[in-house]
Image 1 (cartoon, rainbow, N blue to C red):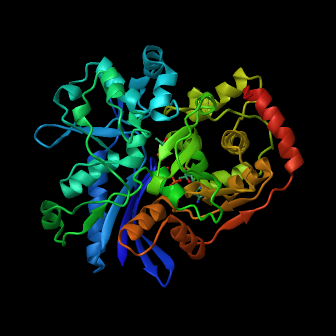
Image 2: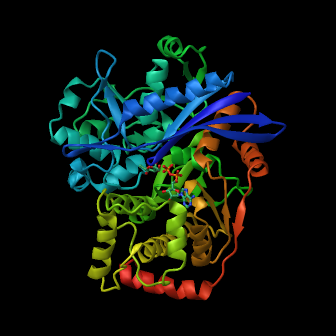
Image 3: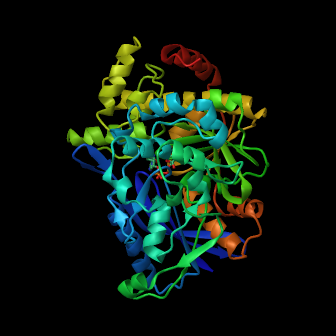
Length: 489
Ligand code: ADP
Ligand code: LRH
């Protein structure tokens, strides 16, 4: 049984072939492409049609290899969306969640509706780019999009619609909107109306594992291929990544490490209480009744954006080069809180890091190596902080941390994370989201029985690199100084 998983991250997309052979998963990367947003005037938008084009390139590569697919599924980053009009066509280009049109909107909505009411209904953390605030921003700007909208689709829903002609809202992504009520098990119409939108736009919510169509005839005719069933999976990439964590214990801590760092634990129902709200944890829906009790950490976005700044200045570094420079730079010279709002939007990130360090009375990193060291050490220390909060909130103590995602190729970050938390880090697999996408397709196709069997199979199929903590005393001292400099309590 050969299946295709499309995994679209905020920095790149890929199409991976998956085969299940004698209880082992074999994965082959067929197609990889950049996912570069485009600035149009004041707006930052996704190049959604280019992404569709790349999905088709993946299908052509399958065809040219003479492979017959049993099924296909798509996962992507969360919160972003498009609207379909009455003629079935996409209205406008989806906005990027880092666009400035949401500036100040979360604060206004929270003032009007109250944070505790929104959290009680949704269990979702307050992030300024959540779908609810993006939609409220469009409403407040009297966007023409809202006049013509008939259907609301998240990014994977939208791409799936382009491929199949069928419109569904997938559950895991729907929960990230902060408009879905996980206790009621439906869109929260009251909340949708409260921000001035129409509940009719929000469609039927399907669970990961549901078959949601097949490749439409126009796509098959254009590419010269046969129809293939298309499944819904945990279409939120973080949902797929956590489904692929090769944990043996039912209670485990994870860090999905890519553009974002998502850290938390898996729970069997949403944890909606005062402490979760106070600590700003989220309860995102996952596959097979699981929820992710987690916190967003700004993650390797800061490094990606530094790299882009240096590139603009004519200096090209790849990630391994940057990691090497960090490794030989002065340790613990300066710290940032990666989650400071200063770092959310695209821009001159090295200058912002310098600004942050100046503002907090620290030595200003002067070149690439010291800047990258500051980012990676600060991330590792922030991971310790969020792991402690996860333990506090879930009432558990974890004996180590699972890391998955492209960021685990940064072995220095994995080692420093272990040093910072004083516990082992188990790193793997790199392509967590794509593999999580695949296991739901296999469970739906009857090839695997459930998520726990799937996790065992993943464990037996991919290497897990173990990092044991070293120099923990130094990191412990650094943690104190990190908290002092950044003001993190
Ligand atoms: P996303 O899915 O959010 O687009 P990925 O999971 O692909 O992100 O992870 C991308 C990040 O992984 C990059 O920003 C970079 O920091 C890190 N990375 C990728 N390749 C390497 C490498 N060879 N060495 C070190 N870090 C790497
Ligand atoms: C990671 C991710 C994360 C969301 C963010 C928008 O790719 O899906 O879980 O918070 O992107």
